[in-house]
Image 1 (cartoon, rainbow over the protein chains, first blue to last red):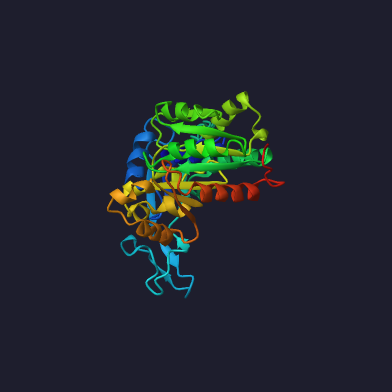
Image 2 (spheres, chains in turn brown, orange):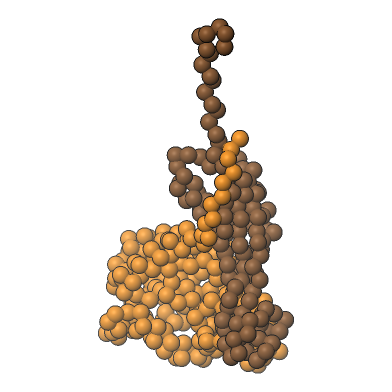
Amino acid sequence: MTRCLLLSMHEWKQQHAPRRPRVNRVHLEVGTFTCVEPDQLVVTWSDAVKGTWLDGSELVIETVPLVGRCVRCQATYNPDPADGFHSPCCQHPMEEIVSGRELRIRSVAYGFETATPPPTASCPTPAC
Amino acid sequence: MHMPLEDNLGLNLLAANQHRADHNRAHFDAWNLLCLNVMSSPGAGKTSLLERSLAALSSRWAMAVLEGDMTTLLDAERLGAVGIPVVPITTGRACHLDAAMVSGGLKLLQQRLDPAELDLLWVENVGNLVCPAEFAIGEHRKVALLSVTEGDDKPLKYPVMFREADCVLITKVDLLPHLPVDVERIETHIRQVNPHTAVFRLSATSGEGFDAWHDWLGTQLNAVQSPPALIHA
């Protein structure tokens, strides 16, 4: 998953070429009904970016809860594995998922190195 | 010093893999074949399933296998003994196949045969109930196996895998008389996370359930192929 994130960031960087963005923060949305463990991703990210163009960037992960919609009564609910994921209203199996499957790069905070302003030409007039 | 900027991307984290998977899928469609991604935990019986299905179906359909394994060629050698073309894909430390690995396997397969002559391409994924569920490889259908020896709680413990599966095969049912396992409960748990998936109970040892499983395969093949699959002489 970290490799996929790095690939996606590389593609994003290419869009800015030839300028070289310096990334401060990458903001992810990760659903709880995915195979991603956010804490583990943060650790592997910090290791993976060392010495690369992303070195020093922070990975911020927003967790998106699993929300289902009962297809019988249309009520939304938080499916619970302990209850077999079924809807508490109608005891219906988890059919429609409203959220929780997100694996998304929401935003990237970055900047460009500003060019050092050229030195001001010295004024030939002594009075200046 | 730099000016603070922010790009709102809304980009799928797996976009790069999905692009590759879409590319693989375009090839599968152009070749008019059905591609299956076969997934399970280690030891659930993927290779035994393939051995039995390949032997039973080889007179009906032209098939090949991309065999994912972390380090060895043992499974590829087992399947090669059936007489079906097998291309091994060793993933090294990676615990799942991704679309790029499958693309590499397809290139090797093309050196041996014309994929357009195939009806069915099996991709046996690395044994793992977690990561393979998230990584598309371009498959038409995902098939998950769960052996009765793994217990009835696995669909609830690894729900993403069983949610993603188009078909779940409950394997090793010949062992049920010897186990304190309720197969009805396994099936109930599968349907709690995926009410509409197809479920079959199989034994690669006795052959129980394979006719129904193969009928399902035929239905999927006809749905994908155009014109519908012809039975090979």
